[in-house]
Length: 400
Image 1 (cartoon, rainbow, N blue to C red):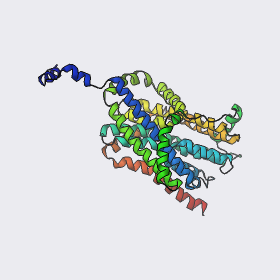
Image 2 (image 1 turned 90 degrees about the vertical axis):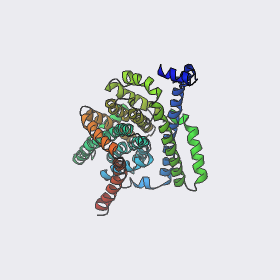
Image 3 (image 1 turned 135 degrees about the vertical axis):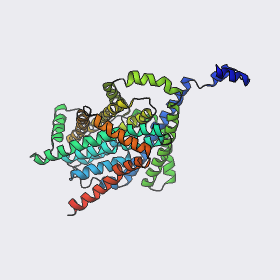
Image 4 (image 1 turned 30 degrees about the horizontal axis):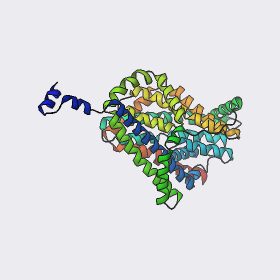
């Protein structure tokens, strides 16, 4: 009423003021455009870093001494953190196994490392909210839930697989043996890997950035880095617009739907994460999209962990399809290792979910108070520790 009086006093019709408010449908279109740019940016980054990976022998050399499980683990963490795609890393692992350059028993450790490395994208997405401290704290906590789930799962399954592989006559750990049994039991037919629907839709944007990188760079490695840098800029631009829109009128309309239906229970959140990831064939997309939603308060924080667990399981569908297109039986076994890793991780840590939740909440508050802690975690877990671990292990075990 006061607004109407003030508007009348200013000589402005109150109906005109109400009419100037952006309609909900227009905000929905705006949100769809932001989402499209965000997904396109992720594919641009993946394309650029994939080009860099193909042009650089560094990524392959990270697995050169794959007979050592610790090197395989750290190499996969480093490779996946660089290319920001576990699909790229798992495809590389499958290729190495199929060609005999990596043993099946060691591939399981590389798969574990790929699961850790793929978590870096969600952290980068969270950094886009640094200007708003409360939103950043929630976003970073959501990203950390994905990280700590994978890290804690590796902390349990890595020694289990390593010890059982040493004790077994075949030299294969319990996870590898189970995966090989499932691959033999299922006997899936050979199928071709389908095109990602998101990749098809965002192909024009990716093509524009690839053309620009090709025009500006003289080598494949430089071209890949330029394309990835352009995709990173586009991602931050899209996220700023997306978060701004989510915190506006659209949030009022979406909040009830998300809380009352999509993320009402943990099983439903898990199912949404798995199904959505199967549909887009990328856990990087779904987990990264969850970060701004959690940061804006659209998704309750207690539902984020089940969603992340479901997304991890959903991404294994693409690995299975890709592996069955390879006539080498070991490829399907590696894919089932990926499935078992995520199923076992959920079985272990969902009943004990208070542990990763408390860890993520504690470090999220710490990073919210002091931004350098966010960058410290990112560089320490995904760059410094893998590099130092690779160097130390190579010196002590390979050149002894």
